[in-house]
Image (tube, rainbow, N blue to C red):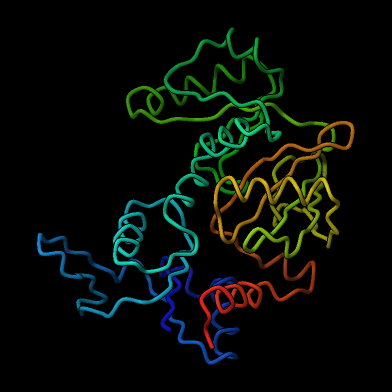
Length: 298
């Protein structure tokens, strides 16, 4: 059985890809890293398979593990592979839903799972309306944010006005969308990341950082430690994974008052470097165990 890891060429040596490849080699699995930059697709009326790698037509794999989310190219490649009955972990629909942070939170909220109160910001908004819905500080995020890279904590009305004026061209002329979200302040210096495979909790880690910095960036002085999930945490993570219909993912939980939680994010392309270091677990091996067991690889 032939398996691809599909990602950008620059991520070829990243921890997640390297660990999965190492584990596959130990098991003599036929696994190959394929860079999307090397792929060309041709559409033709006769439906002949026309996927080329480095200008050479190639036999399609049996299973693909995409390791990225949002580019148009990766979406079109995965759609092509799914139509050719290649098994995708995770599916295009699940990955696209998880990557749209508003739609994924909306799906969770519609099923009565706790999420931060969130406003979809399209065009220049009415700040009076925003202030009736959210208290300062307010979190401003990109629709497809990942981790900490595009998150701003807005402390007051003047700061919000300044930021929105700066972003006006993007919001109105370029038709970009942002999210405004309530700030969960009760334990704002930490969160919980839970890693799941096939709706089963594999590992989790508690992330803490200095000086009440709400951005969970390890290089920005946060620490990680192994965490044993309780029943509430496990149920929330499994229900969120089930609703987005993901095979492999992480779920990030924020700590709310009264020992309750809010689901911050469900991520369909989870990396696990710090998780393996914090828990001493073989996360790459768990991913391959799932593939072997589900698809009966000997």
